[in-house]
Image (cartoon, rainbow, N blue to C red; front, side):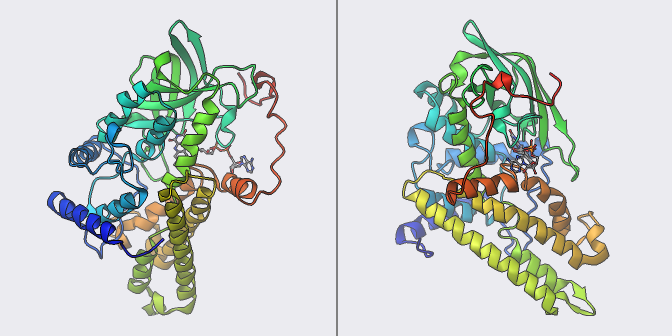
Length: 414
Ligand SMILES: Cc1cc2nc3c(=O)[nH]c(=O)nc-3n(C[C@H](O)[C@H](O)[C@H](O)COP(=O)(O)OP(=O)(O)OC[C@H]3O[C@@H](n4cnc5c(N)ncnc54)[C@H](O)[C@@H]3O)c2cc1C
C-alpha cells in the first residue's frame, strides 16, 4: 500500500471533504476523541443517527463498497477508508450501523436470493431500519454451534422458540439475523439454519441488560412461538453454519482493532497535562517508556490493518488474519485505560465528565474495554483461530463434532 493518496484518491478526498463541510460541523482537531463505549442510545440520538445516514445515502455517500443496484456506490475499500478518515474529522452522530453494514449486509450479499437482496439491502443502506445480530445464547457463545433456539417447519412458516443474549442494539432494531437449530439429530454444525426475523413480530421479547458503565447497549431476547416465513430463510436448510461464518469473518474486520488503536495521542496529551512529583508526568522516564510501548503497538496495528485493506482492495475476502487486530487492540485498549487512570491519581476514580480529565473518557473506557475483549470472539478464541488457521498449528480436540446434537451432554436443565 502506498501511504500517500493517488491523484484519484486525492480528488475523491477533496470531493468528500467539500460535501462534509457543507453538511456537518468540523471536529476540533485538538479535542479528545469521542467516547464510543457508552452505548447509551436515547431515542433522540438514534433519530439523529438515522437522519445523518439518510442524508449521506441521498447524496451517494452511504455503503460505498456495496453494488450500485442495491443502493451502494460500487467503490473500492480504499475509497471507503478515505471517506471514513474524512468523516471522522466532523462531528457526526454515533454509528448505529456497525453490525448491519459491517456484517449483515455482506452476509445478505453473499447468501441472499435476488428477491431478498432487492427487499433488504437498499433499505439497510439508507438506515431507516436498523438490524441486530442474534447469535449468542446462554449456552452458546464461543461455542456458537452449541445453540439451542429451535426452528420447526409449520406449513410455509418456521416457528422459533428459545433465548438469545448479548444482542447489541436489539431494543431499537427492526430486523435481526438469527441462527437456529432445525435438526437436533444432525451433528452440531450441520443442523443449523439462518433466518431474517422481524423484531416487532408477535412472541419476540427484548429485555435490556444494565451494564457496569450505566448504559444498556445489549439485551436478552426471548422467542416464544415466533412465526418466520420460509421466504426469510437465508441459505439452505441445515446450511446455517456456512452463512454464519460469513457474518463472523466480516465481524472480525468490522470490529477491527477495537479499544486502544488511535487513542495514544490523547494519552500523550494526558501525560503532558498531568503532574507527577511536581513535574509533568511525561517527563518521567517510566511514563515515557509506557507511552512508547503503546505507540509501537498502535503503529503495528495501523500497518497490519493497512495490509488487510490492501488485500481486500485487491479482491481478497476477509480471512482469519482479521483476528490479529482485535487480539492485540482490545487488551491494549484496556491497558491504556488502566494506565490513564493511574496517571490521574485520585481523579482516576471520578466518572463525572464535567470535572475528570479529558471528559472522563478513560474512566468510561476502563469500564467498557473488558467487554471488547469478549465481543466478536474472546482473546482465547482469537488466539485459537490464529494458532489453527494462520499458523496452522494442530487444532483443538473436538470430541462432539460428529455426534448428533441431541446426544451431546449438557449441564443445563432443559
Ligand atoms: C459488548 C458485547 C457485545 C456483544 N454483541 C453481541 C451481538 O450483538 N450479538 C450476539 O449474538 N452476541 C453478542 N455478544 C456476545 C459475544 O459474541 C459472546 O459473549 C462471546 O462470543 C463469548 O461467549 P460467552 O460470553 O458465552 O463466553 P464463553 O464462550 O462461555 O467463554 C467463557 C470463557 O471461556 C473461554 N473459552 C471458551 N471456549 C474456549 C476454548 N475453546 N479455548 C480456550 N478458552 C475458551 C473464553 O475465552 C472465556 O474466557 C456480545 C458480547 C459483548 C461483550
